[in-house]
Image 1 (cartoon, one colour):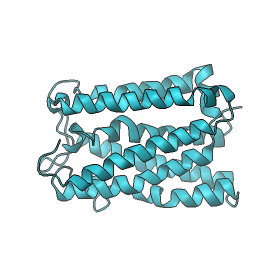
Image 2 (cartoon, rainbow, N blue to C red):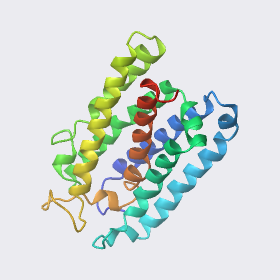
Image 3 (cartoon, rainbow, N blue to C red):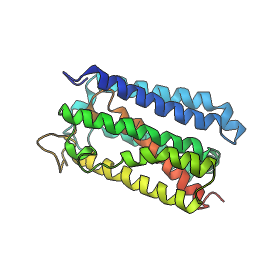
Image 4 (cartoon, helix red, strand yellow):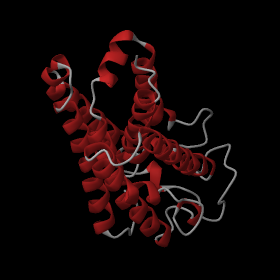
Length: 235
């Protein structure tokens, strides 16, 4: 864990990760597919196991050896990204994602608010660069702030058009990709491009490695599912 970091920052981030997990579990439990509902507990336990594995790896200092090519951190991001690709490329995967309720996946984006607040606190404690915060190049908090309005007024009350919700998802996806690219290029890997004076070291430590290993993939998945459904690609 990061030395001399106030414990409340760690606690807030752990709670944020758990909130992301529960939002996703709620989507599983409210699936239109009976089989998905039946297996929701198994999927939930698999996700818990993934978080535990990532916690154990990071607490062991595995990711601190960051000069290898490719960096060892690939083991944190490659499995969830591969899982997303498989879901969108296979028939069974498409049936799974098309059964998930968009309203629950949209509510999930609220976790982007505490994530951005934690990133700012990490910046103040010299664990991430300013460019990764809303004081720099990261405007991802806007997606978190607007998510409740899109979920309630757009998907529940149906006051917003599908086109409006689709555009919101594309904007949210762009905001996500922006911070992901900046975070990767400011991390202390061999290909680092930004923030040499204060690199992004937080993701190498528990529990902040859960951000790229779980929270970011969950947010990415939610946007991709919504875009697929709203563009009619599930037909």
